[in-house]
Amino acid sequence: MKKYKTKNATMNHQIQESNMLLILPDGSKYGLVDKECALKMAVDEEMDLVLLSDSSNGKPAVCKIFDYSKEQYRKQKKKKHHHKTGIMKEIQFSLNISDHDLEIKNKKVRNFLEKGQLVRYVMKLKGRQKRNIDYALSIFNEKLNTLEEDATWEKVQNGEGRISTTLTQKKQTQ
Image 1: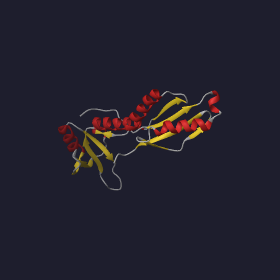
Image 2: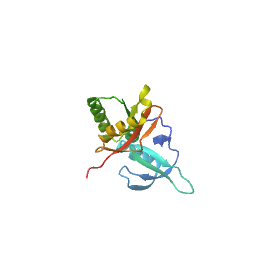
Image 3: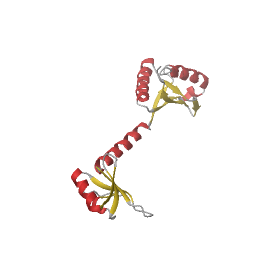
Image 4: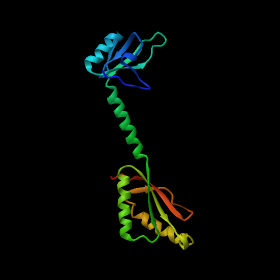
């Protein structure tokens, strides 16, 4: 049984309750036991006794035996993994991009979409290119249609020398 400095969990010898309802590591209810018996069982299992809820309204406290450090590690990994997938990637190119350069950028876009990430597809316009917005939109749509098999997208937006859209997801193959 390890000693942890925890902010949220009351565990092992920090528990003040004298009697508690004990839940075993496999999730089954053991029953009503005293604190010393529960601590002894946790030590025998080489796990921690964690207080899940305090006693209230005549109901006993609920404690569970499990490995607290493994649980914290699992939660941390889950949070970290969830954080990564929410990032939006942005691919930028100009009006005069060559075909090979566009193929490379589209390959990156496909990789991001396979990982489940959102991608913002942006064409930057410079100088006089900003005047001929209709021509730039037609070129942008041509370049966007090369990704038609791999992604769906929202409405194409334009403004302030940029034409962009957000590729939302990889299409499901049937």
